[in-house]
Image 1 (cartoon, rainbow, N blue to C red):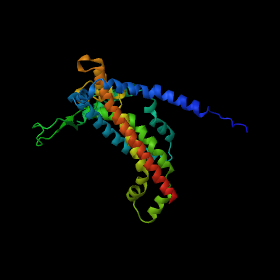
Image 2: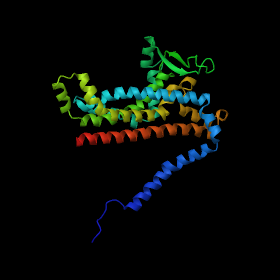
Image 3: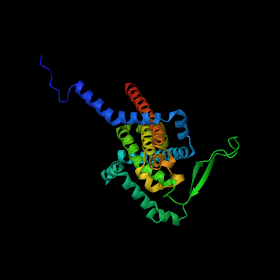
Image 4: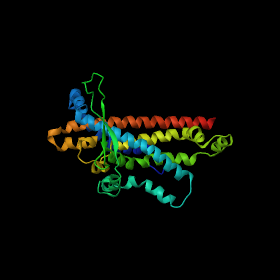
Length: 307
């Protein structure tokens, strides 16, 4: 019996190339990161990641990423719904613009956003003329030394976007929006309108139809897009550094890592890897959540198809 000709190489060669490539590109760098962090020891490691400077940067990064991801869920759902349900002029142009953050260098995005939202910029100057203000929370600790009677959060009012927390949120939202739109849009395009029409025939209003019929179908995709946007914001650096500036109240975790490497007085290379491991652990947790959500969505879809 003649062997069937294969287009691709056999399993042994394909698996060997796959493992080699993943080892060189992913596993070896991550292993080196953990090995370098291991030089610190547990006491030094926890001392680094819980120090006031690092903890403040990590809290701000998490907070800004969370706000940006939530904003992207709302706006991304609206954009995905418009692109997936309606036909209108220049729809393809708008659809292509959504992918622009994927192709645009992050440094270019950062310069463009900082130019636009600076106090002398087009939008920044206009908002400043309107007296635009917004509050932002910051963790200051308990005022009475942890006795439980002091309020640990202090609200600071900002009158600008660039060099302020809102600018960081906008930059993170800019790079994270395509993840939500591209995750939700295919689901919207595949949704059958028969169930929505049946619910409308039974007297359900638009909000009821969206809440009871559409939203349960979109929930797994929305959660996946949210997790992807959040993970993207946690690791963002290029677009954020220009609009955040070198300020303590807008310093992100990636900036801390760079400063620890470049400035000897603030830490060592091993200290920087400790912060990197902390961000890596957060990213792994988000990836695990994404995989669990995708499996849950697949089981739910299979259950509905069988029913």
